[in-house]
Length: 248
Image (cartoon, rainbow, N blue to C red; front, side, top):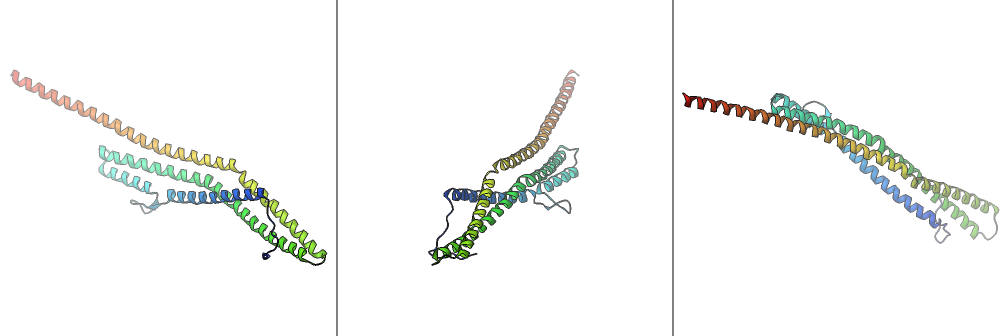
């Protein structure tokens, strides 16, 4: 790069260009933060740990579900207590599976889109550095021409060549900034895909748990009805024998 001369002429970019650059830089900062936050979220959602029951790494929820199922089987699924642990454990295993499918969708769609944008912004930053380099080179050659006491065709030619390179790079970065700021439709599409994936994941988890709860209520109601009939039968038998003894 050419060194900036103190007191030398410095080429300024148009106000419209500077406004677009500020807008693009703000967008770049936001996309960077979104990418980091999404990446952290996915890592946490997909982080596996040692299973309590097996020598393997699984999601914590899957490990909990497996432990519940095994405990329920050990107690006996023919008992209400053991059967409830088994069913709830099985539900948690299903939710863990849905969680991994959800994470995969977010990674493949939303995070991939953000990563693609990051690469585009890297190109933008490279163009910014290139533009600054060419501005310095152009200003240095322009100052040489202005300070020359007599006309020097070779200096003027170098200045014109440097100016042309500077203007070409400015046009390149201007087009890149317009493209980056005109990609909102694609970002909204990726964001909508993320929303759909999250809705489906939570809906699946809700339906799995709701099914378990509904079964518990129905089984409790059935057991209560059976117990009620049994108590009534016992009371009837007692009442019958009491009356029979009085009759005798």
